Length: 257
Image (tube, rainbow, N blue to C red):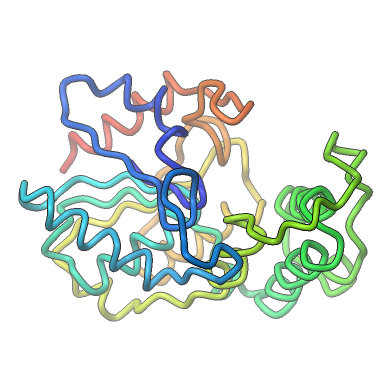
């Protein structure tokens, strides 16, 4: 079970529903316990995919079933494109791939604007801008992408800039993740069973639309999971979805393999 930039701590509730399985989670590079030499440098999906490849190889258990959410879903698509033999089933939940949306130019501009706000004004301002963009429903427009982010106090974020620019999402991955373009030829040819998942409660949001766009390029339809982008969370990081129903749906999908 993986995310990005979410670390292993985000999967405590979900993993508790799979005590009959051996569950492995990890902290992606630059996240929580996985420190980078330069925490201000970007990390790419290809780098994360290579990390996952090495982790699965070290486990030495054969092909794995992989649940991957958000940026983790993007990284897992990169993994399967290169090493399909390592993954039996991939459930890729809401990959935020602005790069393949019909409105890609505006969507990518919005992601760059979030990064620029963070670099200019710090974490609170960057997170407020991020929340405003990712909660936007429907196609992204040039007008929305060009709007300045709301004040951080609106979302309870700190208004002071602490000077740090090492945030795993706003600094290290928001550009590389959203701008990544999967190798769809390799994915369609892969031996891996790829299930693309979207949230019932996040319809129209960028990551949800990314799921639909990936599924279309793969010639499949997304499987709809309960709740929203964080539907599997049970209080981790202050977020609560519908983890019981989410876990039941995930088990159903994995059982179909």
